[in-house]
Image 1 (cartoon, rainbow, N blue to C red):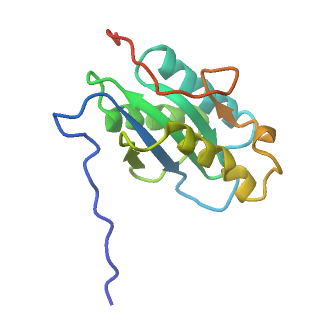
Image 2: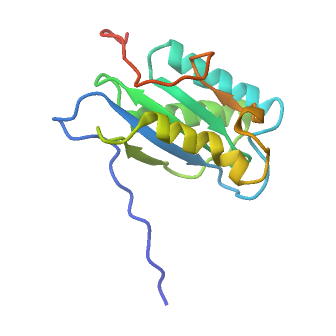
Length: 161
């Protein structure tokens, strides 16, 4: 009996879509073991997130590591393709942190009626739902540009270069 095969979808929004924020999930090849929330791997991954953010490759509202996957809220300008930026980040972190990632990634472009804050709270509660911490603030494996924890829709620089 043949099982259904996953169809790989394009990660490029239609031409009429402006800058978009994506809810992104990236998984390790091997699931069920803690590969991401260990030192020095977590530091290398979060440093790479910050570097891409500072270089305007993407704008990250929130990036949270789980033991075998990660969730993020990320936006790219029209000068960048989210699939290419994520692929470049995965290649870099595979080499520098020794992570073997699953092929591709999951992304959902947030629509106007979806709340970025609501998605951020969903992501922040993931370690609580998994029984890793009692409160979301106790989870330290995350990166966000706002020190006070308040998230808003990201505004991209007019010239991302």
